Structures are given as C-alpha cells and as structure tokens.
Image 1 (cartoon, rainbow, N blue to C red):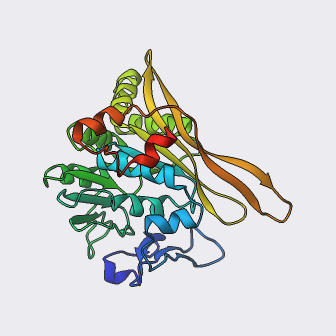
Image 2 (image 1 turned 45 degrees about the vertical axis):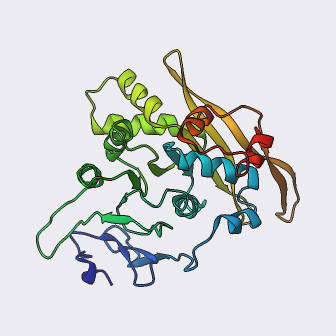
Length: 302
C-alpha cells in the first residue's frame, strides 16, 4: 500500500501516512512505536462532492452565513478554518474553493493529498518523505515557497501544524489574497495563539510583536467548526481579526446559538448574525461584488 507512493514502513521508519486509491487516508504504526503490533487507521472520505446547499440542508451553516462566506472568498479575504480532528474542516475548505473565480490559479500544498477542490484550475503539491532508498525531504514550508514561484493567485495549505505557517503568513502578505488553510484549535482566539506559536517555530529569532503584526495583516477571517455529540458538524463561529493597540482581537460576525440539548444526544439550535457589520464589505463594493440582486439576503443579515 505504501511502497507505490515512494514511502517506507520499517524499523527505521515505524510510522507512515499514505493515500489509498479511493482517496482514503491511511496511517500505520509498527513496533517499536506500538508494542502490541501493527496498527492501521484508515480515514474514509465521501466520494460525492458536497455543494453549498447540501451543507445548508445538513445544518452546517445557514443561507445568510453561506452568502457572507461566498462574498468573503470572492473578494479575496484570507481565511483560516479551525476545529478538532473530524470536525469538517476539509469538507468546508473544499466547498469554499467553489467560490474562487474560475480565472484564478490555485496551488494546493498538503502533506498527504486529500483535498478535492471544486475549481477548474488547481495545481496540487504534495510533500514526499521517501523516494526509493534515498531520503529526500520536501517539507511543507519548501512547497509553500515553491507555490510562490508558480504564479499562484491563491495558495491553499491543507493544514498548518509546524514552521510552514511562517511562509504561509508571508505568502498572504505579499499579494496572494484569498488564500485558505486549516488549523487545529478549539476557539478563534486559540487560533491566533497557535499561529503565533507555530510561526515562532519557523523563526525563533523573530520578535513576537513582529509575528503578531504579520498575523494581524495576513489573517482576515476565522471560521470555527465543531462536531457535536449528535454527529452533526456545524460552523459555530465566524470571526473577523483586527488589531487593537498591538493586541490581536476577534470580532464575531456569526455564531451558532444552542437552544436545547437532550439526554439522547439531540441538538437544537440555529445560526444567527451578531449584527456587527463585516469590515470587508467596503472592499467587496470597490471590487464590484456587492450587487442588490445577488446579496439581498446579506444586507438583511448585516
């Protein structure tokens, strides 16, 4: 399963990530990492490509929030999707990619390719750990730098979990508006702290104030997703990032309000707009995205 992808699983490399032919993701560990023997974990993904209205019908978001996200992606807002494992980050990222204008060139960077973007001009880059008998590393941060040389209009990093976040922030700050990425975090405020910590790993000598300035100018929106105990995945918060006298703050635009949770696991709630007007609406108007016919629902919401 792994040899065909140029990866090894042996005593020197007792763990491996690989991709199965159907797109599922395989992770395997063997002794000495796992004393009980070989353990294989497979994460299966849906073959069908979920459309925006499919996610609305499933309750992941409502129509007003969908309209706001469509506008944000279209006018080039840099978005970070946050949540725990299995919360629906990749599903949401795939859906949002459908709002990227068709004429723009998208370059994706992943450790193991699993994105299925709904866009006609996508160039996928995948990190390779082993090629044949010779170790040749292509870490994510090198691939992000490669994407910068490929005339990418937008760069999508499947998940930032290390020093590559510094290169991602730099890419967002040098003209690649509308870039997307995901990160593991439990709240929008945790996203800012985690990005700062990961960026510090990329350059330990860089002052924290400089890193905060980079995050504040690079990250425009944070979308927090969560998997509830009833099995449903929902967007629980959409926040805009702003600088408040040198301190990064989040301004919540949309949230999921829980109305009732019963003992059997049933969840009842709804998405609501906080009433805070998005700061990127002016940019959207300048670019010609806000039109009376298309965004009537948006004007009613905000």
